[in-house]
Image (tube, rainbow, N blue to C red; front, side):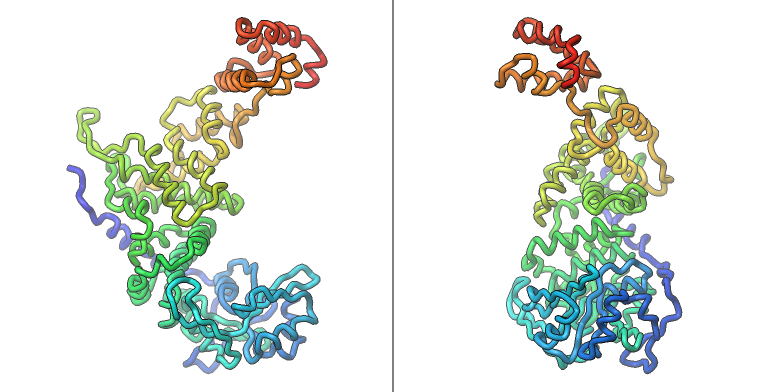
Length: 525
């Protein structure tokens, strides 16, 4: 019998709850909280870039300037800190702008949000902000009444942030870590917890929780989950561009992407992504998939993907493509899975799920207006992720490389490997056929792209052919013959052409035969 609406995915979530804490790169840190009198002393040089340190130390108006948010969090985790955000208390917007002008160019385009972007001659750019109060007055991401209040205390400002791990602040003058909401302990315990009741004012914070859980292997506090569930109906208020940004962070920065998917299930926000939710309870044949249903398999595959060297060393867009491809590669199973007799046994099968999944993946990606440059790479990976079931020959590999355009056999093999690894308790092992595919692609030099056409339009023009529809027909036939292995160089292409058009275009055929030994045409090949 085919399993009914099963609870395998909830069992999986319980089994894979993260319990091992992060090893902090810098241990033994005390913190300044509402209850602790002695703050941590940290060397400014470890966190603050030298040019910024000089600005902060030599500008009296910045006496109450603090590094805030992600840069402090990432520093505590031992992660690279590319951007530094500085919040300045006790000054209004104009006073802050005047204080910064002496150091470089100030961009005031973020005035409505209290942001000043400072670009200095060294090439560094820093964002300075003044504390603000945001009050939700209407639906939508623009439905906030924003007012700036230089009199806010650091603790009040920290309470306006989304999660405790993002509410951490650093005082560079006193070299002190300020932690009003126990964010450092939450980091150590890998706990995702909202900073205050103000969390509910921006529904984007739920999706931010999704990508933070995935990036830092976090488990959400039950009270935070409850709060997120209470916000479920506010999802339509979000601009799709903001949704896309959080998914792209999930796709490009995750260390444990399944933690983010688990977070979507626990908050019920997975309901807003029906193509993904449909995987929950979609069964798989245990002979091939002992790990559970398609959702469980997808979670394992996503985790396997980000552990692969090929993903880790890829550029950001390619990481996004590979992560979205592995997330969506089995969407088609939700509509194609059924029971059937196979080899005299009742089995669970999903014939044609790779093709069925294309439209579903496109629908999912369209929900947050994924750029076409991403979609056109994801789709051929989904459509061809079962290519390892076909015989590996020169012809099949050349044709596969063409079908994958603009993607590559190399990235397809990365997807296939993650797919194979996502089947615990089976040990992770690259299928032999994937290795054969890689070897054959390397032999044919088509790992990164399809073969380039040997016979081109300029060659036909040199042979006296006039532009027109017939030229396109001949070039298409020539490239198809090249993929079939009927010729491998320019001379062979000319001989093929002479035979191909001998009846339909005798003059072109004759010119092609003569060109085989014509050095002028050979130099133009």
